[in-house]
Length: 324
Image (cartoon, rainbow, N blue to C red; front, side, top):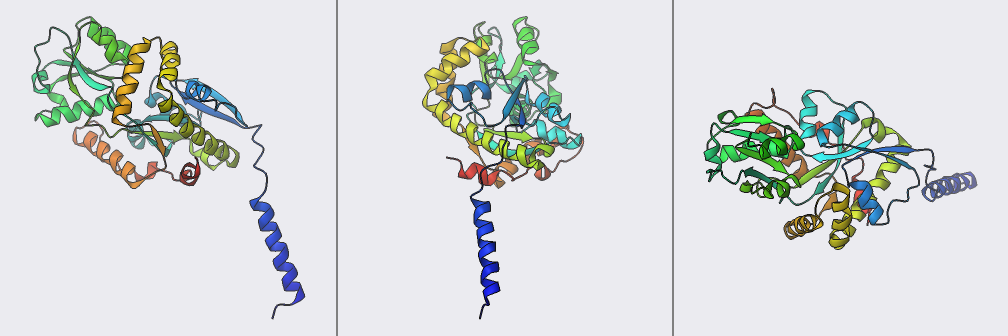
């Protein structure tokens, strides 16, 4: 039989637990979340969706690639960013301090190998010994290797030239490349000059993009709370975007200085394949990245076999799953 003192103790414990569960959220007004973004990226999408009023401060820094964002996180200049599956793989060998905290599933239509309008190449096999530009440590690097594998070639069988997107477009337009593995709006820009698609990577790429964060931000209780909120806003803004493609296309086209019709057409083609969706970490996503890492090792791009599992951190799985 419980004594009076036991009842009092239980009542106090229950009251304390109840108050803890119903406690007001932490005051995040003094928190600054440092966010890496692409031009016309998260900041624009959140603003258009009406989701840019934060309980914390958000400081955006613009980058041109996921590999650069990862370097910034490793230098403790950024808290959270996005990239393809690929940049974190290279971080393993360099022992970079970065964690993957979520994935975004998206379309893969804008990923191709282009050839100039006067090219006689009919298949990827015709690129043997030719000058092929690509963007190092990106999806373009990966799908070029996979395409060459499919025809019995390796990246050593072509004169592979690593170039940034702007440098690649310039070299391609000058006739300095026989082919160019690229992605995004560089494709319609090149097509204006008569370039044609030799092969699409639509069915090669997984469509998995990753959201990466600094370990120090994950372990900081206040920044962790801010990141949980930010991820939910991104998830909601993706739903808004896919339901308001015309409005988004107009603003995005203006932000990146690309013709609105090109952006809208690309977005529609992407939607026909799949919608954007922010997802918690899964075994399938980890397995997908491992496959990419193994491909790079087999091709001699990275010096040793990489285990990607330690890159992944499921801290935010529950927050993402509950967000609606």
